[in-house]
Amino acid sequence: MVEEDQALANGGLYEVFVGTADLNAAQAYWQAFGYRPVAEARLECGLAAELYGHDSAARVVRMQAGADHGLVRLIEWERPANPGLGTRGLRFAGNRWVGHFAHSLLTVANHAAAARAGGGEVVLGPIHFIDMGRAYAHLFGGVVPQPFADPLIALREMQIFRPETRQVVLERFGYDSPLLGTFTDGSLLSCTQIVQGCMVVRSDDPGIFGFYETVLGLRKALDIAIPWDEAQASREVFALTPGETHWNLDLDEPRSGATLDTRRSGRIKAFRFSERWPIEDVHALASPGALGMSNYTWRVHDITEAAGRARVGGALIQTAEYEDEFGHPAISLRAPDGYHWTLIEDRSSLI
Image 1 (cartoon, rainbow, N blue to C red):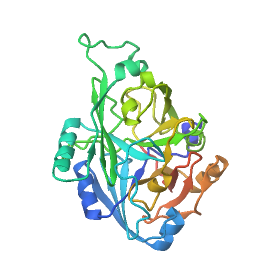
Image 2: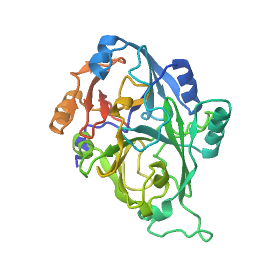
Image 3: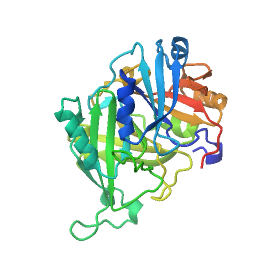
């Protein structure tokens, strides 16, 4: 584990790239969740090819909600590489989707249902119940609340997938984590910024995600095996079969703590499946140039040090150091788990 004062990572998960065929429509959609445009740029072919591996010009808009992380970078490619992940499910290696909290999950569900009823291409998943008090009793003093006897500690979650967006919306019941998301209360849907970026890997190596700890200095907040008979929402969303086990790993930013009041948003939520089970690889549909969610970025204190440490940590560095379309020193790489990342230098001290 890298100590906080030695960590390369500067804050939580910074951005999610969203390739779009209609920049104006994409901005309007994210504004409903509390995002606002904060910067615009033109990405030229040469820089796009050098930094992101896709030779196409693009219009780019960076959008921000209520925090300094969890931003969205909308990219309207002149020539998209492919249509992206679309509305397919979650059981795919290389998959990407994001999560954020809502004051009212049903409010978001109502808008999604109305959009679908009006002819929109929307996949609205069932609302899943997760008994947090039972599954994560260690976070709540070890005493498991009993139904119809005690106030429950629970989480509800629901998928909303559209051709260019893949979101899981969550609502907390009976507990709070004040640093785990900042609500934009004046927005239509009263949601937080993106609090987690999610990934799926097919590997029998339990250390496949070690890169994020040893190179970026992220903190392992959760690392559990979930067999089929103990799975809650994941049983359905990952189409688990009897006897199948998967692993759930949470990697938080260096300042994040282990208690409810010190946990911070901006985490990587990674799911690992054994190579014994059939899982299609879709990395090409979730990398820069594709429509939809296609890259994650992280801020680092020193881009040169980051590149050197990433090489030693087993990453494939795909670019030299360049200034990205917003003028920040950046590199792109493939982590050992196969995911494409862009690291952006930001030497500021975060609060």
